[in-house]
Image (cartoon, rainbow, N blue to C red; front, side, top):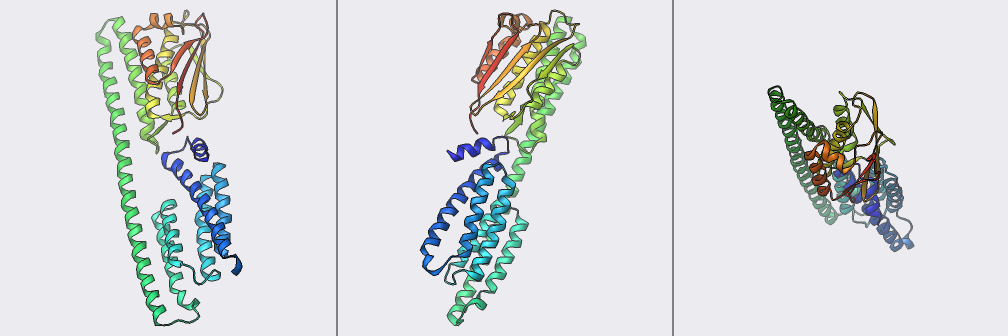
Length: 370
């Protein structure tokens, strides 16, 4: 239940942030429970300061995650994780298993921060280990052997962990660059295709000319999606609000029709699998409204509404002069009407005309929670 709620809270964030928010929440819950368990076992000997600190910080971090304060939640986990290990080191139980506490701290820093910060914390923990003999009441040969083994094991663990995460991060960065380059090439190829169409426009009849213009509009709608993915750090989701506004601005640049988006759009990030067909459907609906305008030289207006829930998106179109009915779409462009029907099925949605005059149309499709 809580994981679904967190996924919904961070649905507009990139994939790693969304997943890390869920993982941090799970970590905090487990840490709270384990801290209570460990403190209860040690209760007759007094409070263990490290566990008290980590319990409090985990509770605060979990609340911050639910409040969509991911950055602050990470800072709380990292800072107070370091403080709790330090407090436990100097004021906690001397018989505690110190190597596991600092190893866990290194893993947390590797996951939630960067390599440089983790190296700094690793060196700090190594210094804590060097101070361990000074905290022992009766140092002897056996303790020195155990101490040297601990230093070697810790150093090996820290070095291997840091190198492993570094290799993984480099691989992920290369993959991200490759995916961005693919979207960049697709956008460029679409623009080249549009340029080739442009070369042919002056050599065809007037009717064919209008069809080529529509074809260019469709290409531009696709290219805009890939362009936004290329420019964004999140290649899994696209801000459809920007895409649709760009499409409407381009289509109405030479027309008297005005497109209003009301109310103010929010939560418009969708997966690219939904953004591509949605941009084409929107393109065809606006084209239909422009072509079916009975007075193209007089100003007219279309209002577009966006409603989103956890499971679906509802786009409403209200045109001041009509022309959004099924018959109007077929008359404006049979190919465009067919595209709307095909792409709506691809979205697993439905298109309905709610007004007999064709002035109101609704597009609705499911999205689920990613």
